[in-house]
Image (tube, rainbow, N blue to C red; front, side):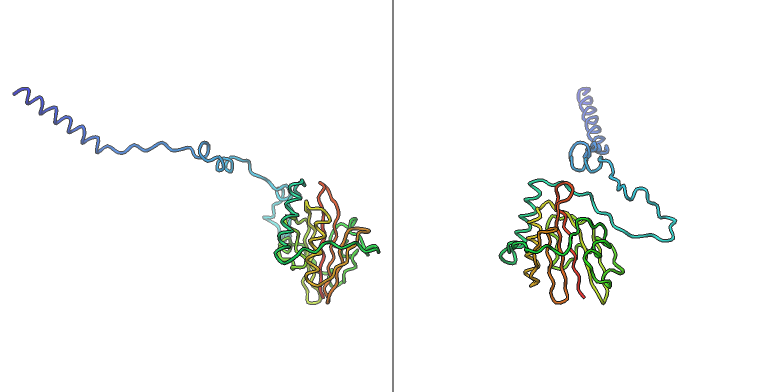
Length: 243
C-alpha cells in the first residue's frame, strides 16, 4: 500500500512538472546581428562615413532674403581603355538601332571659323561664336536641360556634363552643353556627325584650328567642338539654337 501511495505521489509530481513547463513563456530567440555578420552590403552602407559636398557644406541660407539656385557638376571620372571602349561600343549600338553608322568625313581644306579651346564661360563661348544677341540674353544654367537635348544634339553615351545652359524665348531657343567623355575625339565627333546627318543638316567637319562640326539648316544652327582635356578625357561643346 505504501508503495502504491509513493507511485501515486510521484505520478502527480511528474504531471505537475509537465503542466508548469507547458505554461511557461517561450524563450525569446537571441537577435541576429545582421549588420555585422550576415549582410556585408548593409553593413557597408550603414558603417561607411557620410560623404560631404565641399561646395555646399559651408552654405547656410536659413536667414537669406534671396537664395540663388545653381548646379554643381560631379567630379570627372578617370579615363581607361575599358571606359573608352565602353563609351564607343555603347554609342555604336545606339546608332545601329536607326541604321548604318556614317563615317566621319575628311576634314575641310579650309580652317574652321573659330576655336573654343581658350574660351571659358558661357558668355565667352557665345561671343566667340557670334551667336545672335537675342540668344544671349536671359540665358541660365540648368543641368536638367542636358537630359532634354534635341535628337540632333544628344550627348554621347557615358558622357558627364560639366556645363549646361539655355535660353527659351520666342525670338530664340538655345542650348549649350559642355561634357567630358573617355571616348576619343574621333569617336565623339562621329557620334555627333551621324546624328546631324540623319536630321538632314549636312555638317561640315573642320580639323583646324580645333576639331569641330558646323551645320545650318532652316533656321537651326549646330556647333560641336572637341578637344583633349585633363585626365586624357575628351571635352565636347554642343551649341544649338534656332530662331
